Image (spheres, rainbow, N blue to C red):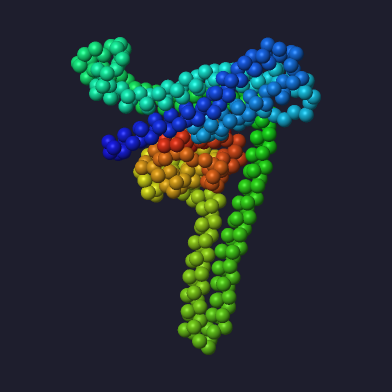
Length: 412
C-alpha cells in the first residue's frame, strides 16, 4: 500500500469517526436536556409510578436511536431489551423499577449526555484547530498579547516558529489516534449499557431457540426441495433422454447401424452428463473433499481458489461430519462475500477447536459496512449456524474491514 493511500485511509477513518461522534449529538443533547426531568421522576419515583411507563417512553426512543447508531459503528445489531406488557400502568411501573433495564438506560443517559457532547466538540475542534495552529507563525505578532501555543507564550520568533508545530503535532495525534477510539469507545459503552441484561436473557433464549428451530426446519425443507428439483429437472431428465436414445438405437440397430451407433454415443454422453449433475447434487449435500482431506484440507482448497491471497490457520483434528459440513459452507460463503463485495486486498481464515466448540474467524481488510440485512449470504450463514445452536458475530465498521466470527458446538 502506497504512502498516499495509507494517508487517505487514515484521514478517512478519522473523518468517519468525527462524523460518528457528531452524530452522537442527536442523542447526547436530548440526553442532557432530559436530565432534569429524569431527576424529577427519580426523586418522586413512588408518587409517579402509575405514570412511569409513559414518562420513560422518550428515554426508550432515545436509547433505541443510540442502539441503531452504535450498532452501525460496531457492525453488529444491539437488540432491544424491552418486552411488551399488558399489565396495568401501576404494575408496569413497579415491574420497570425492579428490572435493571430501566436503571441501565438512566445511567447511560446521564453519562452520554456529558461525554457525548464533550467528545463531539473535541473532534470538531481538533479539525478546526490544526490549520489555525499551523498558521500562527504567519501572524503571531498580530495576536493578542499572551497568546500561547503548546502552553508556551508566543513572544519571539523562535517560539513562534516551533511551538505551533508542536501543538499541531499533538492535534494530529488526537485526530488520528484518539478520535477513532473515542467513537468506538462511545459505541461500546452504549452496547454495554443498552444491550439486554443477563437476567432477561433466559426468556429471549427460549424464544430464540424456538425461532432457530423453526428456521432450521424451514431450511431443511428448502434443501430437500432443492435436491428433489435438481434430481427431477437434471439427473432424471437426462436419464429419461438416455433411455429414449437407447430405445431408438435398439430399433434402428438392424436397419441403420450407423444411426444406431450415433444414438449410442449420444446416450453415453447423456450418462456422463447425468453423472456430473449427480456429483454436483452430492457436493451440495456433503462435499466429497471433506471425506478425502478433512476440514483443514477443504478450507485450504477453498482459500487457494480465491482471487486474493488468503492466509489459513486450521486445526488438523476431525469433528462430527455435520459440523464439518456446516463449517465448510460457512467458510465458502464468507470467502465468496469477501471476493465479490469487500474490495479487500487480502484476507485470513482461522479454524480452531476450543474444547467442545469449533471457532471460525474470517477477516478481510476491505471497505467494511457488511450488513446481513442487505443480502442472503450472511443471513444464510446465521441460519445455518443457528440450526446447530451456534453463534455468529459480525464486526464490519465502514472503512476498517470485516470480521466474521462463528462458534459451532462440536461435542466432547
